[in-house]
Length: 119
Image (tube, rainbow, N blue to C red; front, side, top):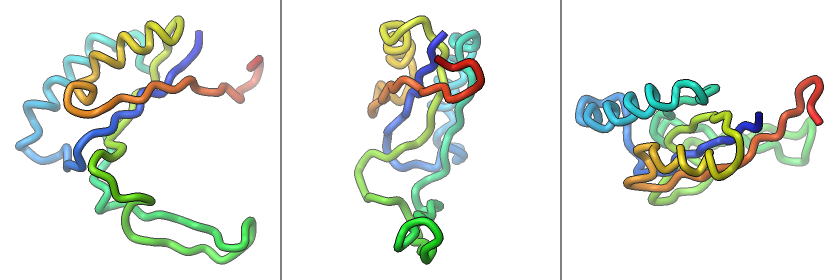
């Protein structure tokens, strides 16, 4: 069965803070409802904790790191789910139930399976 990444873009918040507890309750409810099709996922710390890596000159070149995200935007990647669904329509149906879709955006993208036996 195909898998889909549901990429959650929302305000750049620290989801570990107590003031986010009410929203985390909604995520817990989603997790319970979608447990049969969730294959992975995680929330991400705020972009202030990010480090961006660039290799100048290509493979084997100088490694340069920068504090912060690649781009500064109002909505940032705050987490993701890996969903196993029958098709894109089912993945979209479940993505609409992710709390991040109510206040931000959820991008649904098919996942390429490079594993053994992949067609």
